[in-house]
Image 1 (spheres, rainbow, N blue to C red):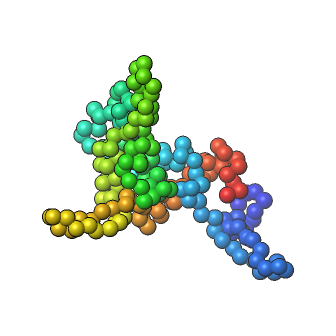
Image 2: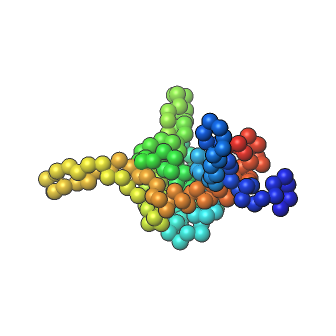
Image 3: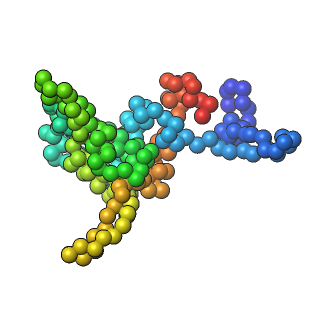
Length: 193
């Protein structure tokens, strides 16, 4: 191995002292998580991994749909569906449980009202809901039950949103770990984390 480290295990781990006298040393493997990598590096890598998954695919109406009310035209990128699904998965992994309305507000922009002041424009809930359903079929996210209410038709389950599953957390953390070198090259301050 080149560089100052000759022991491979010591290069892949970090050590810190435990105790006042420093005789006890604990070793841990540095694991990169979704919180450690910026979105501009993480989302394209996650989109490339999601494109390999058969459960995630762009619907037939995906070529003609606008992504939000403040947009004038459909997206021009050919892989925009995978990029949006990756961004949704990242937001669910970081902020979950989170619902469709909060995601629509997060992906929205400013709606141009002409001479009137701009108002917040929300993103398409149908796109977000469809992407979340595909991520659920892939086993990466799940609904979080909140409470059951009694209605005239019987019991109705209410949900507080969606959160990432254990398999989904492992998936996004593995993608984050795979792009850690690129993130450290672009953002030199990240190597201390």
